[in-house]
Length: 262
Ligand SMILES: [Zn+2]
Image (tube, rainbow, N blue to C red; front, side, top):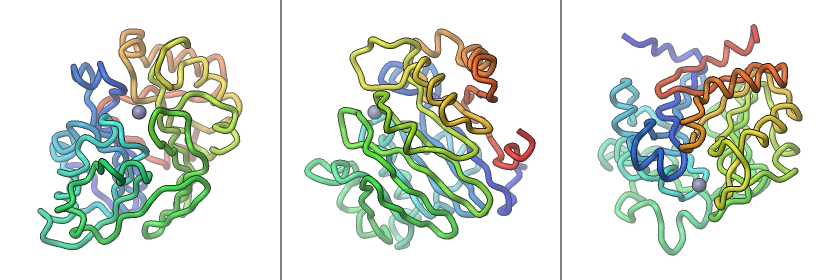
């Protein structure tokens, strides 16, 4: 039986695939990140397979308080409808909140209209705004550089502060906007020079060195990262920056209490 103690703060990586090819080939699983912060369960970026990856780990959609989408791309939102059904117990119970940028809800919404009424609320993410879910608060400090409207999040729980830097091309504002003891970062590319707006390993090295978290976790790997063995890249980044860098694995569970001895 898995430990489901409500007092712990845990982050579960349902999948570590990022961008098109690792996701559509499922070289790595996709499905987002499941947060349990002192019993408040929040789902981040439910990409394709989230329902499979979560149920097989005995994580129950009906326990979620909220689903947050950093942006509308399919690898971040593919399972938002089924996870909304799960959160609202098949649509029969009005509960749970959905947070997403305006363009994920506008002319071509990622959420089906028949599900909207089952949600307690739908809230629009905007740059510089703060939101709260139970005892957890988060801000979306800055709009990222990405083909669609995209935000990362800076979370605050009773005991910890951590950042999730979602998809973006690198720009100086990223470093100025995030912080905390833990940094989770979507690092899609090994090297610069790709046509899509994503972070690369040199960007990750720079951000880690600037922000100096206690621990940095890399995830959302594209094919070049996957082929280069993310755990070896993480080890090299640890040596270069002097900061503990971990490459997320599919299903990896990180306890925020691990930060206390980091
Ligand atoms: Zn994207």
